Structures are given as structure tokens and as C-alpha cells.
Length: 222
Image 1 (cartoon, helix red, strand yellow):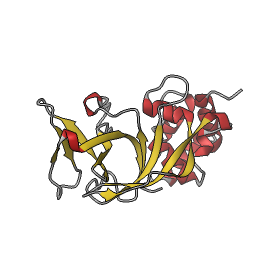
Image 2 (cartoon, one colour; image 1 turned 180 degrees about the vertical axis):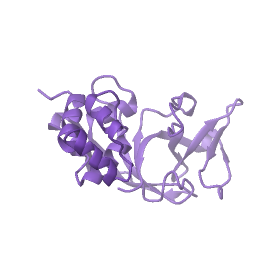
Image 3 (spheres, one colour; image 1 turned 60 degrees about the vertical axis):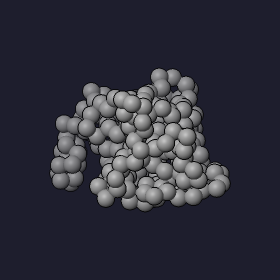
Image 4 (tube, one colour; image 1 turned 90 degrees about the vertical axis):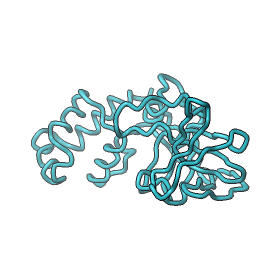
């Protein structure tokens, strides 16, 4: 039987950190990036480390992120990585959408990202971004995790904090697969917004585009 992911995470963190004295040395070695009290709260289960911080912490320790997240194969979900790039700019033509490879993600992480309480998370896929219109938020070449069941910008989840970006979507416009922030104004018009100020907002014509999914996570380093 698979272990509870939360218990596994706390055990692995305790093993990696090694106690309060070691936590203090980690704080000093990281230049204060990983504070002792915060590390201890992770171990005690008082707070849950954000996924991006956990990945950074694993890299700091010289470990793979999966060390903290995975115990058995049934604790993971294979997500297909499509051989395609979504343009963060003017658009890139993609004629064939095929699976390039499959990457394993921790089930608990996907459930949290998709707000799924039990069972397997929503239909997901991975693609690469291309272009600079979403920089510095999403860099060219970033790996994007897309929830293909979330296709209505009007139902975007409300951000829980300033670092949440719940309005980034992948959409098809003609033969161009694109990634932008999508907002629907009171009159029903869909507006595509870029992070890069060099790109102006665009009003999308309803008949010319199709939303393929919401970007729920990305990594600019992978």
C-alpha cells in the first residue's frame, strides 16, 4: 500500500535536514534562503512547502525533487510531453501534435495543482514555450504543464496570492499554438495579454481561436 504523500514528505525532509542544529547550518549555508523555522515547520507538518520551493531545496541539497515526493510507482502519474511549442510571441506553426515522451509527476502535486481531492487529476499534457512575449514570467523554452479540461477563461480560479497566475492559457489561433494571459471583458470579448511590455494587448475574434487548456505550472529551467 502506498504511503501517505504528506507523511513521506515529512520523513524525507527530516532525514535530509537531520534536526534543529543541521537546519541552522542549512540556513547559514543557503544565505538565509531556507530559514530554520520554516524548515522545521515543514518537518512538523505545520506548513506545506510550495512546489517551486521544494524543487529549489532539493537542488540546494544536490538531490532530485522526486526524493521528497515519490515512494512507489503508484504515487506518480505519467504526463505526455508533446512534440510541439506554444508561441509566447507572434505564434509558431505546428502541424503535428504527437507525444515526444512521458514524464512522471507526483500524484499529490498534480492533485494540488488541479484542486482534485481524490483519484487521478485532470487530463494533462506538457509543451514548450517559444518566444519572449511572456518573459520574465515564462521564458522561451520553459516547460508548461497544461490542464486540458480547463478551457474557459471566465472560470479561472481566483489567485490565492500575488504569485499565483491562474489566467495563463494555451490556445490555437489558426495554425498557431500560443500562450498568453486571457481575460474576458464585461462585453464578452477575449483579450490576450503579454508579460513583456513590448507586446500590445490583442482582442481575439471568437471564431478565430480555440482554448486548449490552462497552464497550471511551468519551469523555466527544465
